[in-house]
Image (cartoon, rainbow, N blue to C red; front, top):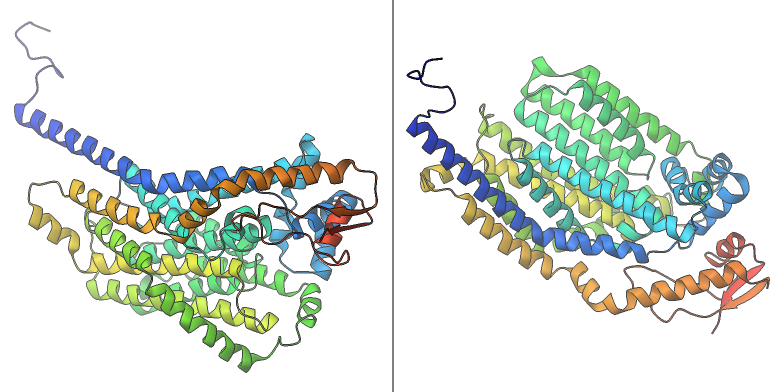
Length: 499
């Protein structure tokens, strides 16, 4: 090549160079905005994750560990399925600490928190995937930001922190199916909003998710099957040429198979027989309504929830509009249906608890309804914001100015106020000094029960009692839970607490 010829890549158009530098500056600046904004929710998530190392097995954990040690994996599942509960997936997953302990010779009290940590990572990952589905045009950093913010928001005010993160039966029975339903909800809403087909990969994920979630508790299967029916009904009303009946049948069929496995368990009749108030349809409907309405009013009037909705609106308004905008009326209808569906599902959970036991929804199940309630508001706020044309209006107002710094600052301030004043942060602040002492006392008791030669034991009551990690200590009756299962696990005749 001659010296007088221009060389490719060495000579740049000045206008293109300026445009490239401007884009790089905006991208770099925006990256720092979302990194800084993520520090607030990440700090909370890291603190909660670090607390996992202090968690210990409790009540049902010892029952499952004993059955696994004496009869093996399959026998433990068979016994519980026939005598205690039809929740097949939790029966499998609750044995993971015992299986890992047997395979690695690591103490059960160490494999237990490791298992919980794995589920916590899966929960946060699921929230990031949900965010990717709801805001597909975001950058990777923005998706990570809003995903961890959603996870932190859910964990900041749940009814029972212990049963959401630090007690394995609560995690596998409610946190796991709640995460699966949230992902399915996001997928169905995204395809309905954008009139896009449900892909083969999504069909497989949804079918597997529906199958697993439906065997975790008595209402998750109904939630997931309701998603399938509502998706099909929405497509029938708005896009008759793209119903994708086969995909809906596959997902719905897999969900119903899981429901059938759960309901077919002989343990269901045994369980309901223990509750004399169970089985009253009208009474359950009324009782559930009396519990649900005050809970709903408290939820929607919570300043934290209002702050989170503001975060979602601002974040959505900063996202670039889609190349093919769906009809405004269609999007608004979908937003209203999302609110109606999530509200109905939460009531169904309350009714299921009343019908199965005669009592109100327990705190660990309320964790799952809280997850769905927050997601329902998140999706609706996102859809209404898009339907209002907020992104285009913001672009017209700011002109050449980059709105990201202002939006990021607003979101950061709101998130800080929402999370710092939350119930979970208050618990961590109040009980922080008790966590290590609780773990030390628990491990000392564990070592004593493992190595003592006595068969009838009286153990010292725990002095540190953080509610984030423990619900109840051993009792005075050696024949009742948890004393009976703890005694069996340690191969002792009786274990009671001192006075």
